[in-house]
Image (tube, rainbow, N blue to C red):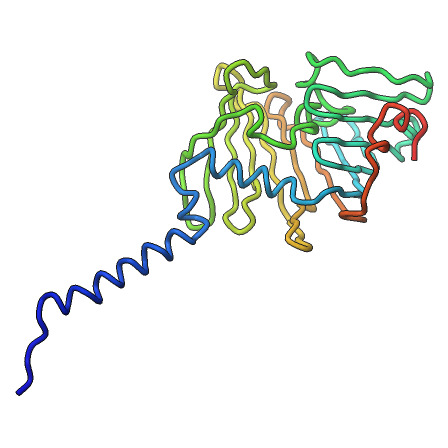
Length: 259
């Protein structure tokens, strides 16, 4: 005679199913990060700094209403928070170099004067070499060092974070909003605001290329809404990655002497 299964017997597989789902969700990156803006931001910072060093060839075009486009070409070398930029074009900028040691220390070498000068921290919100990217935008490699994050929204594709300065931190912006892709935990859009809540600028990063778990955007666009939507587009072509750049490359001596 067939007997109906007991309630206890039915409950065991249901408990096992719930337990399996619990562990599956715990191992899911989106589930692990959901609900914690700082946790998502930590993953963003880790993804931004996954390569030990990179060398890229960059081209830039800045368009300001009523003016001729400004086109530039330069090489960008990175190692952790450090950046070395060397300009190749236009002709009047050839040989100009910029050294970023961190978001508080930036230096420029001007070949016409054959001198290294420090860029004052109070001008970090101004345009970098005539572009819509501020010095602060170019020098920020880890958002979590200066900002605390709140999770503002989540979709199947990504998260939206609201970043506010940590106590005691001086930042160029009063608030940032970052859209983060779940595919690579990297920014797709960054919106910049002042203390009055004015939407100052929008940066879009796209055309990501991945190699050895390191993903880099091939296309950046920064739009300045305070300047009639003037914009700068950066095109990045990766040349080398994890090539073992020496720390001496990111020094004031190297800044003056060049490559």
